[in-house]
Length: 257
Image: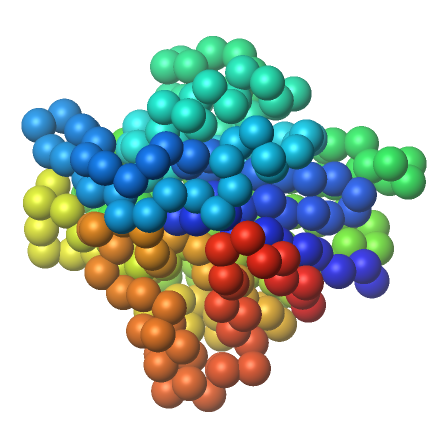
């Protein structure tokens, strides 16, 4: 089985190289500063490890959602116009149009690999907050990557629900690699619960998924991310899963599993 190489750019943004293809998650390339979301503002505290012009060509974008600037910012929107396809939600397609292609939960599409095989990309559910938060936060998707001779990879998107993780594990697991959006994001919109996985729940998710390796994203570079890399390392250690965790450094490729 081949490996997967993940190059962390910042926040939720990374390049996933698998099966001879390059996929980019949630493009965010703007500089630090304040970014409005309705009447609220999100504060970005660090810029990307790579500017969009240095990322290189990608075969597809995996866009968990478009409605929040910490997952798709102004520079990211510009970047989308130069990619072959951006796989995302029906809501994202309605707002952006091409090159977004909507995938319903459990719907798959195939990307041709250079070796003649295919990489299957399957959309999976994601719940961006506690039960009942959908009308407030909007539609989000995760993804499963699979193919003959390839590791099976789960990319969570902004998901906070372990029940959703269990459903995905039951239908698609086990996984070789889990790319988990963590950080326990909190905003006044949903003040009493995190909008993404806590560090403790990320460790629980690793066990549920049977993931051999876990690469977290979405745990630093924004002020509303409340649990960082050390919090993840502590939670995985307490769960006895330190050997599964691969904390990425911005700009440095991580090869897994």
